[in-house]
Image 1 (cartoon, rainbow, N blue to C red):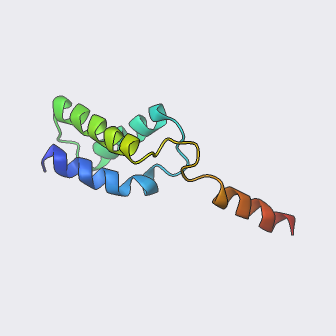
Image 2 (image 1 turned 90 degrees about the vertical axis):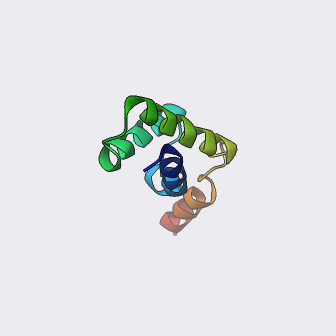
Length: 83
């Protein structure tokens, strides 16, 4: 599989495997782990290109902005617990 295909695949799955991740460092580690699990034969150069590529997509999509994935879910959970 080509690095671009892997970047697209991981970027599409990011909301699932990066759930709860708030920092870029955590995201890079999780992406690296996904590569190890599913694309272990990638060369070091391709592995770095994939990690950088997925991170670029996440940045472009605003994944690390404060409002991403927070707010509504957390508030909803707290309200239901209070009742």
